[in-house]
Length: 329
Image (tube, rainbow, N blue to C red; front, side, top):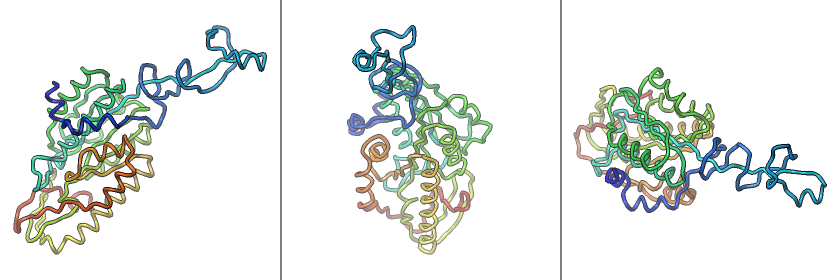
């Protein structure tokens, strides 16, 4: 199983994980050994408040200095250090098979698997619980939340089995999700968000008190539309096709795609969802740093740098998720 983990997380990326930390914006809740402040009170490390002594309280928790000043007994309460529960939700629909001509062995689903594996490593190192949900046309694949190296192995094994195929599951198939992913959990959603149902799931999770992080995975060709000449674009989920002269539609595509991305960012921000884009021609550590590290400087750097342009041959047939074919974007 260690081999599978090594394959999912390259050594250079694994080394970067030491600089990152998985944190909950809400109190973690529950009891246990972790690195997160809980909303429950009790004996712990960080002072929270004083309260009046009650029969049955441990004498060692009385603040004797405060007693000397007030002539009354007060007990110190602290935030308990509790483990959080982190979930990775991986979009395994057919559009996630998309790769770039310049890097055909690196697909969106592969990037999603690696990012999910990194989440599990962060949780493992911090003593947190974690689980996995892979979503596609077949029955969703669940790995129930747990902790420790064996749980990491179970999640890694399931990640290795995932293949991008089919369409996003319907609402009935997602019903068990609400029972298994209990608030307040940290939920990392990894998707291209081309399907409105994927967006709605993230928004519903956030509205239901889950701490949602979203990574939108895109190919460089979807971002840049570097094509010339005649092309046939095919939606891998519906089979719909469209023939176009690439130069004639490029400006309209980029405007509409840019507007769709901006609208997605606006909706996620309004819901309190941390959202970043990841394009396949960028280093995989970027979304991790933006979500779990000091990402502000990295975002600025990404905006200043130019994306990698990919040349395409004329009259080539491309299997690419064309946004105008989905949701009328």
